[in-house]
Length: 342
Image (cartoon, rainbow, N blue to C red; front, top):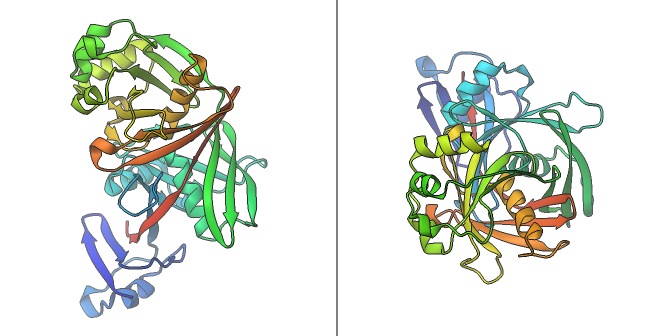
């Protein structure tokens, strides 16, 4: 198996090309030297190296969906080091996996954005971590639906891993019950913040903050063309979000690319330093609840929401809504494994 070692400013990343092989949880310097073919004065110093992995979430193939960095066995890392690692890996979110604090949970997750903000809720940050846990052999799996509990912040949330014939089929996350919060009525200011015309914003549904774990402002627009034209002013949008108590902004229309989808969307989150996200489970869940509440979709239905097309990272998020029970399902593709020396 061919390997390439890249020396970064913070340390060394060992990237495997071709099929992926799991690295051990702790990689000693001598092992890394042998794997990289580095000898003599170029040998790496130090004792411990931190493995990390990239998973494309809500994806069926590599280089699609929403990439997530995963750092397992993170219990030895303090907050400052975690923030530095998230900045170095430079993804929308990096999820660190810990043993649980609660006896009722199987694993505890903490997710940081590249600027170092911690985020909560069960979205791609959680689904990608559970996909990694399932594929890496960290979970006891049998054919059918396997039930687990994740600890995120103060929440304990169910996780189902569907498994068949030795393969992970999907990961299903149960989000928090929906909460419908403040409505934005400043359509002119909202349109300006999004780089759109006021007429682009639809009045058929409210522009409202809805949460299933994280509160995002859901903004309906008339056409997919308007979504494609959106070019937010981050400072203005952050002010709009602050005024209504929203974290991010999910603009959507009921004019999807695929007839099997119910909506087409984009996500912007200047409050967390995310310019745009290609697949946002913590926003797709609230949107599905909003569509059920206003009669666009039936309670008990399963909805497909498109996102990431404008970023050339097409993603499909599948959401099931049964009353106050909101479940987000998806798949992932593990695309990179590496070792970070800090």
